[in-house]
Amino acid sequence: CERAFAIGTGAETRFAIGATLDPAGGRVTLDCAVVRLADHADPREREAVLRHRGLTIVVSARRRPYHMIADFRRLGLDLATIRILVVKSGYLSPELAPLARPALMALSDGVVNQDVAHLTRLRTHRPTFPFDTEFDWTPMPRGQAARRA
Figure 1 (cartoon, rainbow, N blue to C red):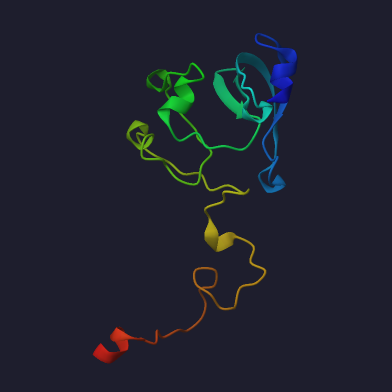
Figure 2: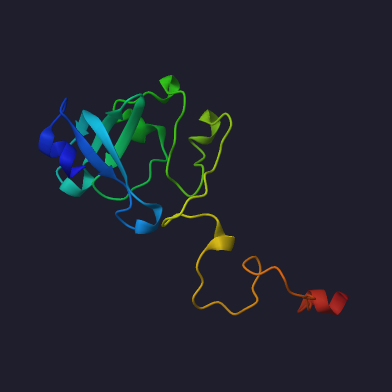
């Protein structure tokens, strides 16, 4: 985002996007044009709209969700005219859900990885489902369930 503000609207340059919080997801380097800048009193709130070939990309100075239609409208983006919308998020927000036809979730490495069975576990008692599946287990009812059994 800083780079977009440094070169200004209409300028083109190479951007390294992603992996600022967790390098596991990796960065992508793209040649982009700066389409729009959203300045704020606090530089940490800045946002930029970039264009790479047919893609419109929103980047922000700090990590933040884009869960509301207003988040996009504020940047001059009309979601009704966008054929495919990709949002990096751990869930499909209720406001964006009606726009999804169909809604798809891409399981990817990084800080919002939803593929919990494959996450690294350093302090987990073993075996633990769903991380481990090759073990015998019989549930032991407790409380009211045990009294009914």
